[in-house]
Amino acid sequence: MFRREFVKDFFYSLVLFLFRPLKTLKAQTKYKHFLKIVLADGKKTDLTALMAGKAYYLNLDDFANLGNYGIFTNNTRKKSVLKIGEIKLKFTADNPFVVVNDQIIQILNQPVWNEGSVWVPVREFCQVVNDFTELHLEYLPNVPQIRFGAKSTNVLSVSIEQKANGTLIALNTTKPFPAGKINTRLVNGWLYLELIGGKGNAKTFTKKLKDPVVAEMRAVQFARLLSIGFRLKKIPHDYEAIYNPDLSQVLLTLRFKEIAQNDTQEEQPADNVNDELENQKSAWMIDTIVIDPGHGGKDPGALGYYHLKEKDIVLKIALKLGEYLKKRLPDVKILFTRKTDVFIPLWQRTQFANQNNGKLFVSIHCNSNPRHSVNGFETYFLSADKNAKASKTVLLENKSIEFETSEDKKRYQGINFVLATMAQNAFIKYSQYLATIVQRSLRNRLRSEGMKDRGVKQGPFYVMVNATMPNVLVETGFISNKHEARLLRSKSTQAKVALGICDGIIKFKKDFESAL
Ligand SMILES: [Zn+2]
Image: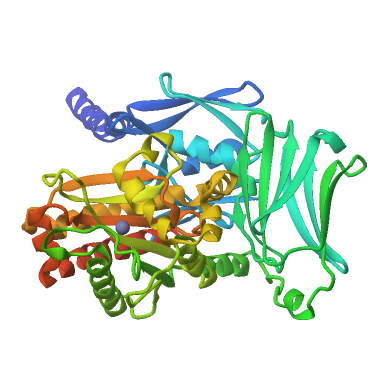
């Protein structure tokens, strides 16, 4: 009797032991890490965290629960949309792109998929939330802890409306901006509004628009002022900015002599949020790629062994690249800045890409160096970095403007260059990613040729300034190096270079579009 009870008890305990403790044990080994949370009201709680490398990851579902934020997860596509206020943040596992309402941004570490949830790297997540939403999260990675705080911005949001006699741009502020604190100026089709003492999330005011007058906005936060640029589709005959204390708004009014009826009818209001998202999606799809063979005509580019001229080699590679792209991406429009031996000023190349709604811009070049031993291929993205200004490659490529008229040359000088480079900020991260992928693909294709991988670099190239799309410049090798000159002159190496760039473009397109 005793024995039977004992055995029964024993088995009962065994069953308990086998199931309950094991479950907790499993959870504990899996979630060794916890993230301390301090909410705005001072309440504290912990969230489980994953750790990979030195980065902590948090579960988006858990985060949504903290503030009752809306969350929608698509298990098949491993995506989650988190809604904070009016802002929707779409994260995709194993994808570096985050869709924020009508914008796409890139983060360093990719989200991961684990147990039916998207987990996001905490540092990048807080950055995105701070840049775009009403929340302010302070991340202390050493604890690790997230502290909810208050925003310190005084310029909050923008709206653009078409009126009978013009366009009204309204900025909601929490601080007055009297006459002396507001500046405006119109430069090269951009209308700049400067609010002295203004603080805002530059990213809130940096976006492409579906508006008949304003094509896009770009903002930069300086120490003393917030500068917001509006790229206009047509130039107003008159404009002014005033602060309206009753509305607590800065009102920027653009007046046109007449407003074409067709322009305003073009903009059909979206039926619902989904339609809107779908519209934005199609605006982002990479449906047009612009290939830019460097130099041409009176500008031969670099000169190398075997009487090679850069302009001839890069044209051959570019045409080959076009062929491959057309074959592998039959639905994508492939455009060339030149298909023959003609001279085109640098500024016209990106203008061509912008006017044709190019979604990627790839400029192809060969390098040269007085030291003939220097060799290898490298991929550049634009940066205004002063250190890179003196780089031999930058100087060499920018020399093309010596063939341009003095009128053309003015476009690259002083303030124009700074403003144009600033305006590019929105694309630099994508360009950097594109450069990384193109360089990696080139390495794979050129390994068999024994060509040296010189890596991804950045520099202030005139040919890339003003491009309103991700853009890179590929230096395919040194024709001042005998070995590489021989390779680059051969059809087979030209084809491999073209294939490398083609692989990179396709991979970038796939990653970029799968985040949409
Ligand atoms: Zn060149």
